[in-house]
Amino acid sequence: MTSIYDEQGKNVPCTVIEAGPCVVTQVRTVEKEGYSAIQLAYEDKKEKHSNKAEMGHFAKAKTAPKKVVTEFTRFEKNQKQLGDVVTVDVFIEGEFIDAVGITKGKGFQGVVKRHNFAGVNDATHGQHNRLRAPGSLGASSYPSRVFKGMRMAGRTGGNRVKMINLKVMKIIPEKNLIVVKGAVPGPNNSYVILERWS
Image (cartoon, rainbow, N blue to C red; front, top):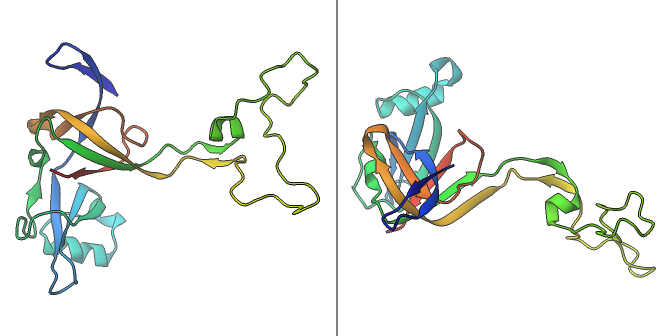
């Protein structure tokens, strides 16, 4: 993340995203597939890392194999054709967009980190090693089990998350960069999907 100053002189925390260029690798229609959408692909990958099915699919769009492929259903009909290039110019400064990504994986975590448990808090009254323990889990002799959904330790992160209503602060078309207000899910250099609603 970084920060920029807006028109009022406020320091705004922002995230810089490289958005494109993306190539239209397939145009889905209601007549053929039953729904209308376009498929966008991003970032070249080596041919030796692609199978023949991928090579043939990208050859139809006259482009090299790509690493990331996703579909968008909210493009206007006949707006894009096979092989067209979509750049950051589709966004407008000041509009609000959504960002979808995979959050940082944190591995196996305890209840304090995973569910924001407070722990014992009072370490002086005979507490030895129970400061970050989960506490009681199950019921008494009836029903003698742990209820489903009990907040316990486990794998944390690595989930698909959508951050909504991120304001587009600045667009740098010559470098295909878009600066959005706030944070987007995922670590640095990860892939995100930007959805435009206006």
